[in-house]
Length: 114
Image (spheres, rainbow, N blue to C red):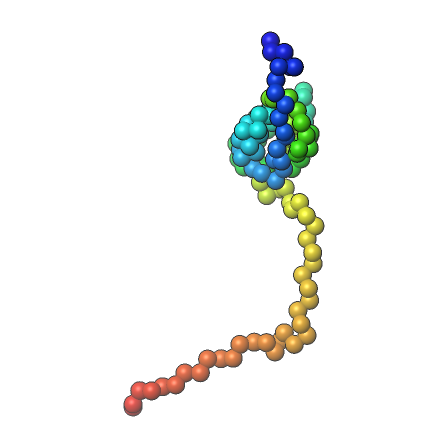
């Protein structure tokens, strides 16, 4: 058994928004392990396989200081179900004269002799 006081302190990386397989590598490089938010549920690896899953939340937050190989709890959703992280701004209305802003038809000159 390893004494928890002997483990070095590491910084939790930001993995939200990353595909699970990328976030797992980023977390491992930082010295932490990704885990499910439900400690009694299946391991996070089985929840994010097979297929492409995106990480939508994490705890502790990025920048937190934890002991090396402590768990970072994440939630994942199937790719395409995550939505955007920022609220979209509505598109501005087109200008009133947009209907007249159509390109002119090209003009062709026939330079061949008949």
